[in-house]
Length: 161
Image 1 (cartoon, rainbow, N blue to C red):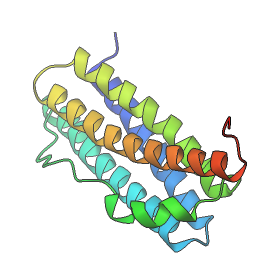
Image 2 (cartoon, one colour; image 1 turned 135 degrees about the horizontal axis):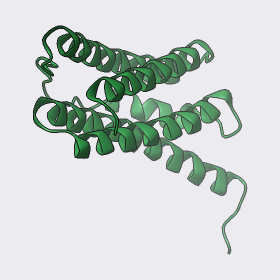
Image 3 (tube, rainbow, N blue to C red; image 1 turned 180 degrees about the horizontal axis):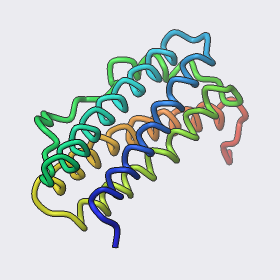
């Protein structure tokens, strides 16, 4: 069975990978709306890193799992969703980055859901909070992917009639 420290290390690695993906995706696009979406997601992953690092330091120093104030899960990047929906092209770098981000977020949701089930107390609360936040990222990216698919099907006349 994984120790609390091992779970935190895995979580920190997962968040750093997500932040790196979002920062690279933001740097690789010339589209302002898509850049803002990726930068917002990178910033949120940075917040996750801060909370996890605080919990790790607390656990290492005191033996207690204290992530600090978690707050409410914010409504992710809904403010940029409308603009992004029409700006991503099907075969673009942005579309590929969105697809990769969906896989990363799916993994994060699964990781935190499993960690929550294995934990208790403050650790359980932290992992549940992270699972909900990552789920909101996944829901946003899935909505974008579904919109993109519909546009592709319409543009390519994939309809059966």
